[in-house]
Amino acid sequence: MDLKMKRSMLLSMIVLGLSVGGGIYTASNSSAKSYAKISTNYKLSLPGNSRNVNFTGSKSLYSKAGTLRGARVVASKRTLAQLAASNNSQSNVRAYRVAITNRGSVYYKVVTFDGQHRGWIYGGKSTGKFGGGLTKYSTFNNQGMSALTAAQQNATYKITTPGTQNDGKSVTYKAPSWTQYKVGRAITDSTIYANTNFKIDQVGTRTRENDQWVHIYDPNNASSSAAGWILFSGLTQNQAVDQVADNAIRVNLVDASGKTIKSFDYSRANAQKGTTFGINNNGVWSITQADQSDILSKIQSALNGTFYGLNSLSSAQMTQIAQATFGSFINITVNAVSSIADNAVRINLIKSDGTVIKSFDWMRTGATRGTTVGSLSADEQGKLQDSINSQLTGTGFALANSTLTPAQIQKITQGSFGGQVYVEVSPVASAVSPITIYDGLDATGTLLTGTTSEYATAQADFKLTDIGPEIKLSPAEFMKQDPKANGSVIAQINALTGTDRTDAISAVNRAFKNAAEHQYNSTNVNLSGLTGKPGDSFTSGMVIDYLNSNKLNTLLSPKYVELGDDLNPTDKTITYSVVLESIQGGKFGDPARVLYLGDETKASASVAK
Image (cartoon, rainbow, N blue to C red):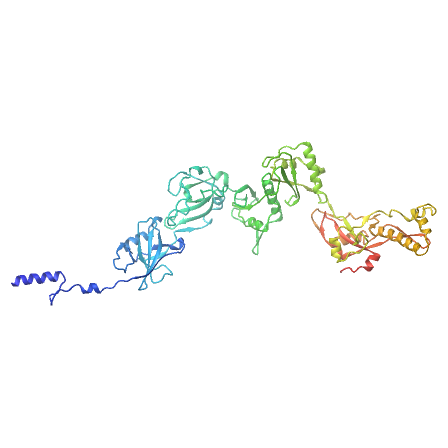
């Protein structure tokens, strides 16, 4: 072989990477390189929100874990950096699998929300947090209601361009568009909701676009399929209908599901928009008694004729009202009326502050549920007045001249069968709390055992009876009897001798005394002078003062006869003394119950002090 050919062969071997030093050299360096292996590979079970991530731009995206044999780049670091800075939420990223190599490296499998980029990326050395080429990412910032003005919160809205467009403005979404992986629209056509008045209960912004999305619902249909997220710019506010005055709060009366039954505005002169309605004293919110009464009255007036009611404001509801700001609204939950017959209207008789005094159901034969009462016949009006007057007996309240006024009649005629109405009645000039007397004796004359408070509160059936100055057979009448007349008491006793005579006299005396023990002489005794404003409280001290000033610390029984051995009658009375410990307070219009014990009874009684 000539020198020229030798030099050509040598050059060829050098180009091919071969050695001429004793044979062919076969890329031993390449075969010596080692690759990582996967030790663990599993699906991530974290909630979707916790698996939303963004690229850092420091690592590339591979077809498999980057240190595995055959791994190839599917998106460069530059491409991922561009996706990380994108202002389009379709570039959001979801991690859904994790793999750990035998070298301890963590790789996550990820996909962009638009599905354009999918692969494995280095995520650091720990599965406890995203690292390396990934960082945790929030796709949407939910601000609740804080980003809306009070007026916007109070308003209702319509979809501006209802239809089928998937543009964020025409239909609603289960989550703001492209903020959750594979979570789409709530409805695909909003045409049938073109005239629906929606309200807003959440608001927030997408992170990439920084556009405002709101969650809307139909306040009149809690199960509406249209409830969901939509761009705020896709709504038109019903300004003319829903704007709340700067010096008012709107009270929406809602049922248990949140459906609005009635609404009214409650204003205060010179109130400023944004200021709170009530008072905060050391963390405790309150409203004035006047506001409390007035608002409850307006609630009941608004609910008149509906199938809902509210007899009082709870402490939670009063706190809610107190915390309301002028220019905004609050929702007060009212109660569905129950146990009313289909042909009946529940008539609630209330004070001016809305407190219910009495309730009863008035029926009309043949009436059906939901129909309006309408006009009342003369007979119906008369019977209604009688029923109301009967209900108000002893309450300290009454119909003026015992007759329904035109305004009261109107309230009733506006009612619906199966529902209820509220009718305000007036207090009488003053309410009497009559002193009701108890003697603590049962029907046989035996002292009831127990404490004095038990005598006063538990023995309502054992009252002293007002029978006048004398029992039925007075001593004078007894003396007029003819001893010789057949059947007269004296004639019968005179016919007896010895112990029979003694026993007969004792029996007569016992009968007269037993009768007197359950009676008192009411001559010149005024037990009906304790008066005050109906519903106001009286104390035990007020009752004691009244007893003292009217000389009522003692009462006398009627006169009764006691026969001597010679049958000559003697006038007797029992003195009843008040047990001061038995006296308790109460409300004007309710009886003041007082325990009196007779002389002999008191001497033998063991009364708890």
